[in-house]
Image 1 (cartoon, helix red, strand yellow):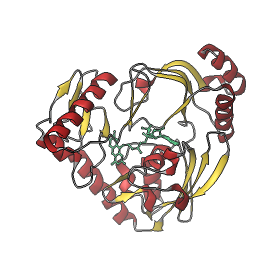
Image 2 (spheres, rainbow, N blue to C red):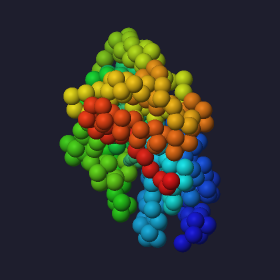
Image 3 (cartoon, helix red, strand yellow):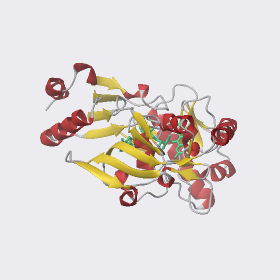
Length: 303
Ligand SMILES: Cc1cc2nc3c(=O)[nH]c(=O)nc-3n(C[C@H](O)[C@H](O)[C@H](O)COP(=O)(O)OP(=O)(O)OC[C@H]3O[C@@H](n4cnc5c(N)ncnc54)[C@H](O)[C@@H]3O)c2cc1C
């Protein structure tokens, strides 16, 4: 089936504005790089999401899920088939000490909502620029906190389009991994269990973490956050710094001079610039220290 055929079929079941043909993904990634999606699909409900998944399954069309694009490098050749974005599913509701958020909501907004309701537990997430879905996928965390600490349950869609309610214990949340990632589930909704706190204390913690982030991270440039996972017993940034790579430039991508664990887009970088620099850093660190740097950032799409 051609992409035009897929488009023609999808616009019969979804609102037309929810299906875009040949959409540039550089608009949706934090690095501002990446080629086109054949189809960029943004359902407005769980039912529509289910319809898209079942359609894709039936017609053997590949589906790639995009969150906020803050932990992704999409290669310059783009992505064939459907790129699914839950950006239109952003409801956040609060009941007593529980917050339920749809996967397209920004985890920063959930953290702010917790502050608004004087609930503590999500302060760590106040500067993580991902969606709730992306945060679940990676078990996102910062400054000693992580999603696993506060998650109660999730609603996911399986590859077959079946809806499942899963408790935290069933999600195998570990350092930057979860069964959402391993089972290729599409997370639709998360429920967080928080605790009553004091507004001033929660706010002070969030302000402190924001200050730390702003002083240490190169937030003035596009990037995808920490490029590498923390190798056991080491810090990726320190290894990169000690390898003399801070400031290294390939094309428009640079190992940040502010935080060596980040690669920033300083001058219209392509995804190829990013992946070439990542490989160069991995090879150099391996040669100098014998340590394998595994990417935390997901690299997807065609060359
Ligand atoms: C400046 C900066 C600072 C950062 N700081 C931190 C930090 O402190 N801590 C941290 O953990 N991360 C950090 N990150 C990385 C990133 O924000 C997190 O990993 C975030 O959780 C990624 O979410 P996303 O929605 O952007 O996912 P994306 O980058 O869009 O996708 C990442 C993966 O999640 C999957 N995914 C997205 N949505 C869903 C869903 N609904 N269901 C299932 N899978 C899904 C995608 O398929 C993809 O494989 C930072 C990034 C930047 C740019």
